[in-house]
Length: 476
Image (cartoon, rainbow, N blue to C red; front, side, top):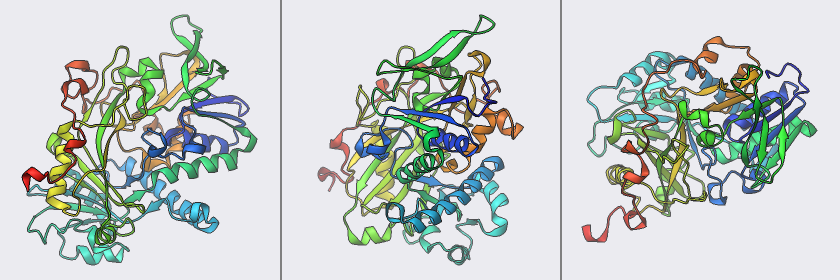
């Protein structure tokens, strides 16, 4: 039921962006009995992919941007989140928490295209953000001067020295953008939950104790629908609560089968490259080099994005022009990573080749890929979030949050209050409707095509480590 009484127990499944931000907002509002469940023991594993964490939130870095074209509601949420990141940066530095380094680095976010004219999305961004210099046309003769006045480096205007290579690009620099250190962001918000919550917060983290076996249900009050009573975890224990919130991202449909109607788990292609060259480490440093996108809305031959080099020498480059699915019986797409039972460390060759071609064109310092991974999103048909009570369950007993569609992490500082207000059925009516289950959604993404979908992993040729060399010896 919608929690009117702050003493009511609330179960939250998933300790990523949605789960952490919601828990923190509920605890700050005085809720007395909040339980977080997750199959990963994040207190030990530290949200690190290299330590066995494979959620979308468990990552080295994420893009931050406020550029949203005409979608000013997301722009507003992003800028509110940015203010929170700046506040957290200051607090982390003052406390010297984990060494005091920031979780948000304002190095800029550059959107680039090889089209002859600036794309519509970027034109809309300039219209809404260009008045105060927050967005800059990279072909403005004063672009570098404007960027440096905002505290950014000249590299943010032309990340890959395209002009020096004789390549003409269109694009927009979002001066509010940059990167978030994803692992540390999550560790920090979990730490805040523990500080604020004290004995009002109960953590159930790790295999068996934090992993959902299934929902506990009974007949609803009308007899036609189910009513959620809580969850059973894989250690055999039953946990009851009047409200259960499932924030499981790409795993949502594996816990709530009805979610197949609205979301589909899709795997993006990610390559990680270890860089040892001192010159490259300086040139692509996360302190000055921007996050970037290239031909992001150009379909299968576009959709590339990337990051500066991390402090420990890794550059991450991704492709999402096509995102892959893994249809299985009962689930429209089942997550498959290096850490799932059915393991996968390779990526489709098509996506790998798109990344390799970009590296050849723009980043000659990279000679080889170090590892590949599928990064799993939770996609809705229109890329708007799904944050709502599930109508298949009576009495408002089951709430779901998913459909990150690749752009939820930057909202870590703002989405918690939004989710809490939707749970309490208060706040912004526009967002409540936008994120609802019942709203008819535009079909920007085709979902639920099953094995007939050409993106299904079983239909694709997978790359192997043999394909990781950018310049194979046979081609030298």
